[in-house]
Amino acid sequence: MSLAAIEAQLIKRMQDEQRRWQDVAQLLMRVKSEALWESHASSFTAWVEGIARRADLQPSVFWRCLNAGRLYLELSGKDELDPSSPVSAESLELADKIRRHAPKAVATEVLERTLDGELSRAELRRVWGTYRVAAGGSTARGRLPDDPTAREEAVSARSAAWEAQKRKPENRADVRRAELGAAFREASWLGPYDQAHTDTQPRGLSGRVAALLVVRRKAQQADRLELHGLWTAVSVPELVDYEFKAPPGVDFMWLAVSPELGVEAENRAPRMLGILSLKRDRTLAVLRDAQRRPVQAEGRTSVLTSLLQSAYLWPA
Image (cartoon, rainbow, N blue to C red; front, side, top):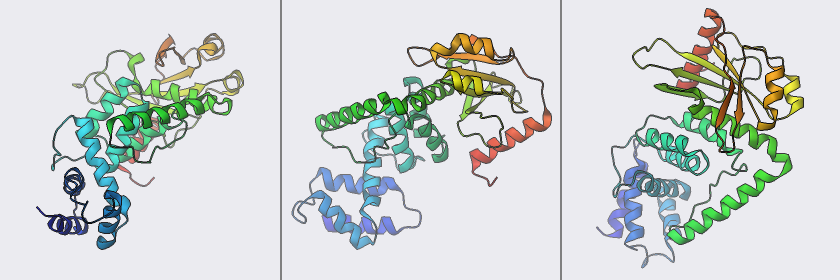
């Protein structure tokens, strides 16, 4: 296929109401891999800018499709793009960011569920929000080089910059809180379960709740859900300031703390409150089990309604 024919298809695809990034990415990847642009532009970037002007679109739209194609092949391990894949370009970008900063167990689950189309963009944004602080606040939106060696060097440079940001005194508290939230989300501390989902921005809950973990111990018992709420403390003043008023409708409340606060937390926290401590491998250790709180039907209904609103983006 000639470059002119590909350009015509590209413009048509981009103007389709139901355009798919896979179709655009496939064409762009062909132009780049076969160097079809060489006799028509000074660089591939210049050619992309030209085709974007003809399509009356921003070049970033084309770059996002191309980047999504590269990420899909890299993350899925496949040799070709799947036109029927339900995953969006933005979802792939978010999954890639999470992969580079989340614990391995979390990253693996996120990648698998993203490629299967199970995670919405809203859910991925919430997951990324958990790890963004730990990454030094950088979004890493700049495109990485395609050359494997140059790409590895660029990733290493970014990682070094993020690690430097994490070590700054003014960032330590936020980084530690992000680590506590990430370890809580992983839920390995909880013991056996079939399904779990974490909302790191729970709406409508009182008492400074940092996250809400919804757990189903047995898939066969779909009506039996456990709601686990999280508080975090990374300093003694913060720990002392807590009133420990659990929101109604939550079955178990947990306090996750920095390692040096474990004893202090056990002494100060109410007996019904479970205590979690961050370990060196950035997972959580259970210092004290949480006790089930009395069921409050109205409060539980309110919590579950908020979760549904968040999951399906209904207005509050």
